[in-house]
Image (cartoon, rainbow over all chains, first blue to last red; front, side):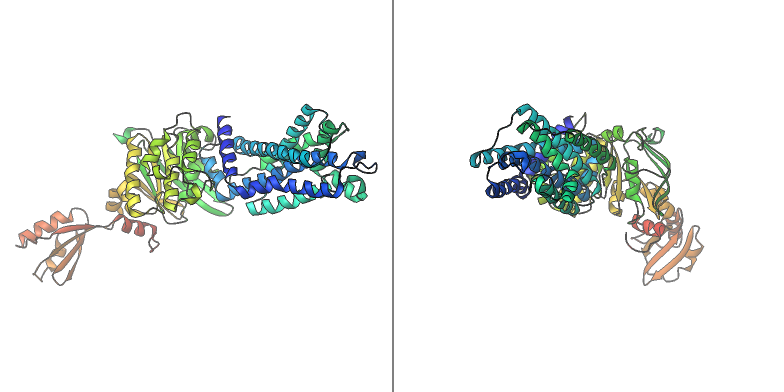
Length: 245
Length: 306
């Protein structure tokens, strides 16, 4: 536990010394939000977004997107890079546990997700009208669960992908697919049925749905179970496939 | 005295394969408490694999190992808290500062050493706030050795520790390794520098082609494998054929007034007595022994400098 705290602190400090990565993970969702907000405005339309105003729909969705960017791109890139360069081997030889190495990455992801989401919501509040969460506690719960589940998938990617380069390439690609199909892009209702079927398999769609439930008071149905399953399967496989070198 | 103590490390018939490639093929040796034990060998001989198995970083495919009474395969976590390790191929995050690394690594142990002292010992005080990625190779190496000591280890594994250090820094490092031992720790030193092995190590194992080809003190290895003794002197006398019949002498070479007499055992005493008997008292009578380097080349039979 002490090691986890220490390692997490160090990892967060390292991140603040890496302005480019920091900028990417903080600014990209903000820019996307402004672009989509400019396109859609916040006029509710009965055909799409379950009749919810676009920005009320997109602000929680972008919170999900922020978590996904950190968990699917930054986390695996950091983990694979540390393995590639021999940092993990160094930690291993000094008796750092897998749980501490992986745990520190998850802590960094969650902390960054909080910072990034607060920025996002604050910016959105300055520019747009949107509905505020109906249940703050519920949103926090959904946020933490989403963060852990997506981070678990990130750990799995970081365990499987051999280099920082491949992790980043795969992460960015996967993130754009999630972005477009997962509910942070075009409305689900306007997608073709094939796209909808694919969207149902993207982790982000279910993350967005469980964020919407406490935020907007709509039902997320099975998505809660699916996100919990992501967490369980992702961490089990990720820890199993974890390699020090 | 040392010989009566139980070994800190015992390796017997260690085997490690990577696929069909045999990296370590039946290596055996033991290391006594507070010894500086050298593992010497050409590149690719299996030195690093051997010490990585001992640290529980790799699974052995055969043989028996014990380090501090623990089995590196099964008690790796417990073991790592009690050993220090400087790995040949490893790194730290580029942006971590020297003091942060020391602070982090010393926090891993229940009995950490005060790391400010390590900064001092290893000449890193000025570099306290420097980032790892900005350090020169030599400084990175010094930081790694300092990190290996951060948990107050009982056994320290140093793999190619002085690679990348300039000659002055190497001397300093040798001195500090002596101090690690004086502090009560046992040191296992993997190296391909002969002078380092000769100056530092109490005992050595020479590994070649994945097997131990010789073990002993540097002196013992030179006596056993150095190919005899050469006695040299200069003299104006030209007829010295009688020297070949002196006991222990195997051959005599004569170049100008320089004479080299090769032999085994107490050849110096025999030659000296015979020379005096013949009324020759050369002022420069001396013995030239093989160096560890020659022993190494002879034993590893690879004909090129390691």
